[in-house]
Image (tube, rainbow, N blue to C red; front, side, top):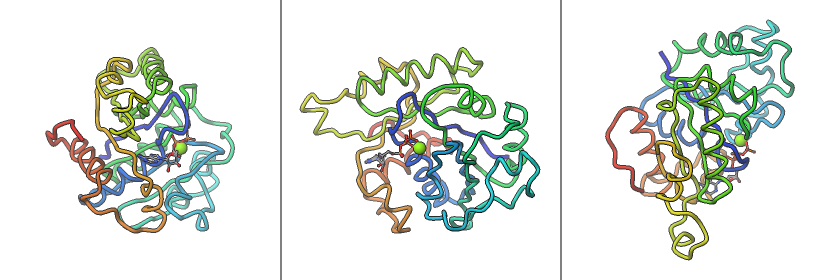
Length: 243
Ligand SMILES: Nc1ncnc2c1ncn2[C@@H]1O[C@H](COP(=O)(O)OP(=O)(O)OP(=O)(O)O)[C@@H](O)[C@H]1O
Ligand SMILES: [Mg+2]
């Protein structure tokens, strides 16, 4: 049965969709089957990041509204990574039970399911969070993003998510910029967000293009190394939380 994650953030543009694609690549390289569910209604992007947009016909709202069979919207990046694209409009029937039924119906087909959420913590994000085993909050190393991660974590806990099921990803970490005093360091981010750290992903301009172009980043690349470590932790391995 798949373990289900929702990837969220308070502030937008911090790297949720990039995280979803790259954690799927690392988990797939370790032999796992991953379903990515694009939860960013109207502003979907995973089809573009995986270069699958031309094959997109149906989306997950078509399953919920009985307009197509369960597997019709699924797009295959390869045999291990599949995508369930987001609708362009919020479907009429969308509550925790209808979305849970949809997600759980795929749980026996995959090892991991990641729901890529839009930024912010509103009703939609709470629906995604409530059907997930863990919520991964992504933040960049700046005050605005860190505080929004803290606020998001609090809202999720108030909506019924257990604090122990929240995890933090620090993305776009840049040691040189931190030394210059432009960004928060890791301890400062953890102190502000108050969320258990799952991993630190360094700044890497090629992350977005590697999935589109299908050119794998070398395992010696710092960002690829970091994603492989996060994948290892998700798989239950004890991997130290440094870069
Ligand atoms: N580790 C990284 N290093 C460098 N650039 C990154 C990194 N992570 C993400 N980016 C870039 O940041 C931008 C935003 O990333 P992305 O679309 O994944 O964010 P998002 O949180 O999903 O945004 P939204 O809130 O709009 O859904 C993209 O241009 C992406 O390539
Ligand atoms: Mg996104």
